[in-house]
Length: 120
Image (cartoon, rainbow, N blue to C red; front, side):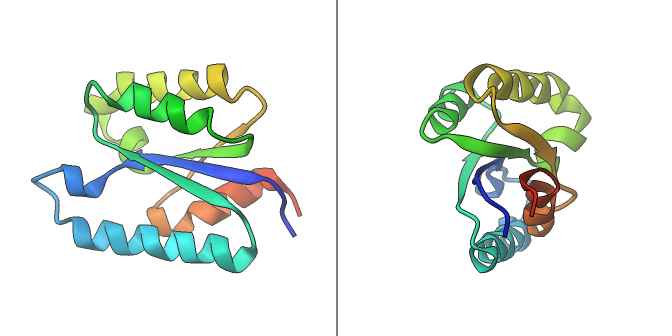
């Protein structure tokens, strides 16, 4: 069994008018259910790319001792968010220096990304 608590940092799909949030929310729920099935404690930090994001992420990073932080594809893959992605990675380095950093492909494979670093 993998050990350690995981923090998932991703975009809040409900914050984007141009997206239908339902499919992404359903995929996030599937990922959360898999974490539970695997017995892995996981916290979600879903943000909009706005002035409050950094404060919200720092609060999440410092709320627990995380073994792994997974940064979601919405932050990582969307080119206009490159600077935000850099900021997120550096916030993890500063505020959770002992945590591995992992990247998912989609919201429902987030546990797989974490498992690569949590070990068995």
